Image (cartoon, rainbow, N blue to C red):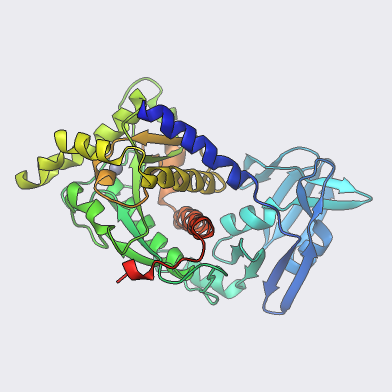
Length: 411
Ligand SMILES: [Zn+2]
């Protein structure tokens, strides 16, 4: 019953994101200055950019090769099949939202190339500020530093991408799942010795960095390899906190073809609706067994009580909306399929009294996801997309609630 209501709420929240209007122009900012390039519409009405102007601004090159257009940026070749919604990069064919096209001898590339693809694959050098429709070229130096020290925090020359219009003082709690004696899932396809708890912490710390760059304060449930009692995690987000994001890695039990399952999903607090959602919730809630005896009394009836208490609570509606935005954001950068927004009764979320979501960032039991989740560039891309979604959510929330500052409830 509650499930049907929540689903309707989640669906109602979706169109707002779909209505995102493409910018009139994008700005390419580099060491030599800024160039503004008007966004056009192709025959299908999709936003595109003229490749010659774009590549001139990026210092790259474009070359037509039969049906393919090869676009070189920072000496990396991206190959677009003209007229088809796909491109090739790093020996893999990948989907595009629109197509490259040729109009009056000029090649046009989907806006997505600048807004998502370049900052994703060349993230150490290019950053895209969606709110300002601005691609910043940090130059060769940034790339060399990053390559020389892949494990260190990537230095940024323009570290501040603060969102215009976003009120100051927002606080987000980031919860890297598991930790300490609770390793989470063992990470079948992670590099040797890497477990779920390590990946959630790595992405969690990057998410903190990305949120701070956007002018959002962050509270971490943990910043080291320690175990926080499941019942306590949600308590990190109470009065002075706007929302709660828990990060996890999925896995699936050994059975025929199980390594083929991959992709990502975002949960918001609710009663577990499907068998699969219940399975994931059970797995994450199982972490209780690593905690001391006193910490486990929040299970069972406590969960039911809290769920009842939260029925139709606005916080639930907000959680659904936040989950939609995050799921969509990750969808733009993840190489695996989206499993959508789901509901489940995660104990970690039931104790947080603010909009709360739990992100399963991929499957460690799948080789592609295993690789994706453990490379610094894609971890950064996940963190960046979640941070963008959180900011979009906060902006939208501010719009809905007007300018009434509730600074009073913050410290
Ligand atoms: Zn987990």
